[in-house]
Image 1: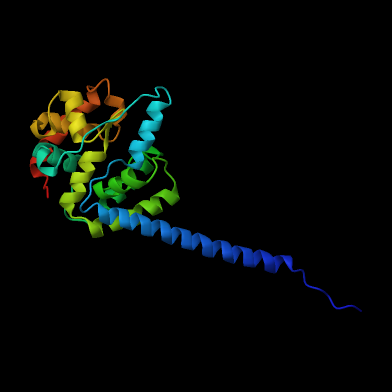
Image 2: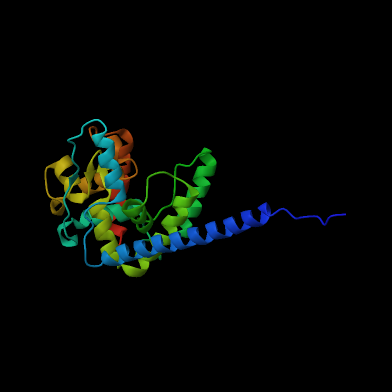
Length: 240
């Protein structure tokens, strides 16, 4: 009787999987190293564009190939204190107290989503939103959330809270093709971001979760109600 010969295919397949895992791990390490270097550079350099800006420009140019974004960087001191307070009140009331993740806000978001039967609240902090805006896509996947968490930790480790808020206010979307506080102030009020009054600031902060909805109609019952609510909270918001 001839000895049984074990098939070589399973061994080759296992070796292939091991190599694939090794290559994937190396690629992920290289990618995260590049991201870390980009985050570190933000200490001194202002971002010229972001992943969300690029996505927004592509969306606009799908119907108008000459479309351009409205965006102009302004330093922290040239952004109204009212807007800083309004944004923190609206998006991340414990901004100065956490290390990038607000556990209480996440728990509240989970409860609200469970009640509604769908995902409407994310509990994301300003740092998490910044990580997403700078480097990731708007699509919601588990892989993206995991990468967002990694980048958030990098941002919190490398940047001061003041710098995080400065970048955030300069890059987030405030309407279709409108990015940053200066462009938003000019578009909606015809004035500089430094000159925003409390009610104007509160209204802009109220737009953040769904900015494109208000590009042409910055006045809805919900927006009016949310603006009034934020006006009552702004005085208690601490800013860096």
